[in-house]
Image 1 (cartoon, rainbow, N blue to C red):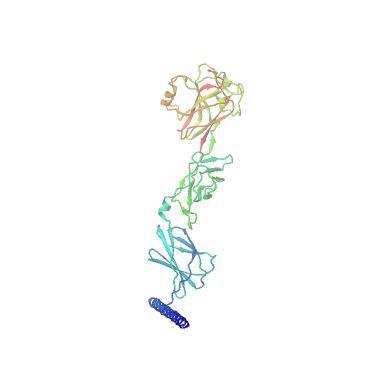
Image 2: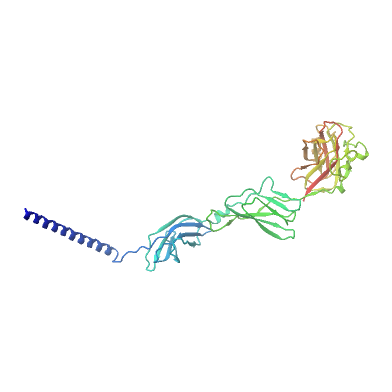
Length: 412
């Protein structure tokens, strides 16, 4: 029994020794094969960069990464265009919280993949790391940029102190700035920036009647390294100042079928005597009531105005104030005389046929006393002579009508 046990132990030890020999022989052969495959050189892979990103630019891009802690790294090798193009960058830090920025210039407007290798002093490379879908912008993108839109309802306001406020619509989120180019009161062309957070800008030194232009700048994305400007300036709507027409030039005109005054002291020259606010009798125009409304009065402004823009009418301090009236204008009275009574339904068509232009019909909803400003039509023809056709009074009185003052403004 003891003899059999000893033999078993010997066999087990022999078996174990045999297995160890096979292991060493096998390992030695595999190690030899690996070294043979690599010509006996040990393979070293330097550490990889981390946290890669990019910032697109104008025919260039910026690549970013955090460096590896591997102290052996001396350079970075970057490939693109299927390794047709490359760049070598020196490694200056091995602190992983630092940021490396590399600008790749002279690119096309395209989407690229960049491959980054870390290199040590012996030329060993890390495994490759790709930075993909890097879009580069250029002239095609720039050609499609539009300038920021101005407010279509109220593009500008001429302030009482003579300054001008330009109003713009809210910009795109990638808008960086809008340059406003204008001529100042000294005759010098200057520019001022409008920030994307502002919807208006006030020009305190704008020279009236001169051109205002604007051009906007953008970035394609938040991380972009370059700003792109719209291809050209856009013209801002022409800015006009409202200048009151010179009442010292106004004069009475009496055309056939015009209203007559109630008495000499209430003729139409009362309408430009400079009175302010609703006036009482006789400091008003008061018609004689000879005909039922609508009725017309006519006057000469003394000169031609090319851009009549606004009218203000003030009623009497009590009664017979018009709440529905028309403002008509013409440059010359030659051939302009109408033959129909103003209360004839055919009178407006005849007036147009004679060359008169309806500048505005005004409807008031109050008692007609207070001064009321009304805009005239846009782009009016030249006007020197004004006809006011009164159609209805606030108190429904159908023959008489009263007015205290008429004021007109011209754009210039």
